[in-house]
Amino acid sequence: MTSTLERLLAGAFPDPDGGAPLAAPACTVVIAPSLAGREAELVAGAGLVPPFAVVADPDTQAVLGARVGKALAPVIAVTLDRHPHADGATVARLREATRAAATLVAVGSGTVNDLCKYSAKLDGKPYAVFATAPSMNGFTSVNAAITLDGHKKTLPAAAARGVFIDLAIMAAAPARMIRAGLGDSICRATAQADWLLAHLLLDTPYRAAPFALLTEDEAVLVAHPEALLAGDLGAMERLARILVLSGFGMTLCGGSYPASQGEHLISHYAEMLAPEGPETLHGEQIGVTAITMARLQEGLLAGPPPTLFPTATDEAAVIAHFGPDLGPACWAEFRHKRLDPARCRTVQARLADRWDEVRDRIRRISRPSAEIRDVLARAGAPTAPRDIGWSDGFYRAAVTHAREIRNRYTFLDLAADAGRLDEAF
Image (cartoon, rainbow, N blue to C red; front, top):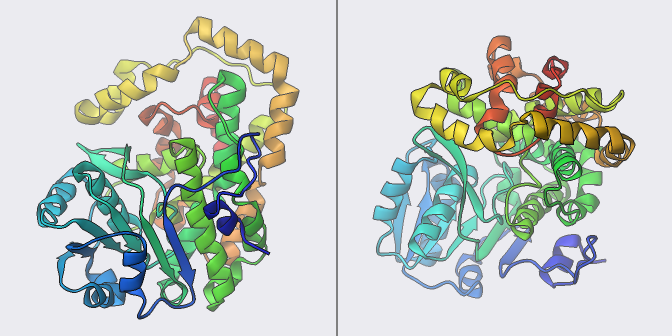
């Protein structure tokens, strides 16, 4: 039996939204127990040409970068700082260092991948990625999380021409990074609930397709999360497929909507404003914030339709909270989804008319917060803000103000305008 990924790559996955069979964008995806000795063959098979810039950080260089560089030699070897920042300054340095390259080859995950795909987009160059950890779902998406002038944004990025995943390398990644990949995957339910809510209340576009891609592997993964930390290559292959398919889902929808909603807004707020403290991984944050969002969603869906009030937060309040540098950019996003009195009446009427439908449809695709917590706990992942160094006061501020950083309507907005955000805690 062929996997969902194989059917998608073959252009033969049925579209649950009623369109033609789904096909992945032009991309070579290879997931295998080992890719040692195949690096040059894989890159050539994806239609990529030299000169290659092989981009890594010190850790990923040691794990896989040296091997890839040797196989593709001669290369422009670019080693970023340890724990590089995905920000405008680092992008500028990377573009300068890879000016003479025809192709960028990222060796890493998360930040290394985002920096390469964003730089490739700006310079009109193709790129490929050799993954080193199953820590995030951005391998096949066409967006990158980049911080510009202190404001974390999701920006258009190049599509990978090749995604190469050596399962032995992935299984040997630090346990925290494996757990982070689980965290970045477990939020499927909360992100889908938020996106569906916006569709049902505000008529924003919505597709079931990106979630149908995940169904087969997600069910097995959440049933046996312990296997990821036991060196089980079959479990690691499922997680790798979920991460790749989640990225393709975002690409099919033209944005990060199916994978990034309220739980990511809280995480982005924390990454923008958290005081100095222990380093945390994005996926660790998402696991914690997904539990919060699931709890909030459950509470709001448990009773009658919420009673909404016009949005009280105004421009002065946003700038007062975020400061004169970040505040204007946040307000430019937030103002589009505020409920003025007329819009509030419209949304309230729709809640009254459609509440049973809204509640039933969202419940069908949700996961209980207790189940999400249990899956993460069984894998040894963080489940509470304090587990990743966030104080109660900071986390309360993050949940309260996260909705103000982006024009994306979620249960955070519904709860805030109903005066019920406290149910998240």
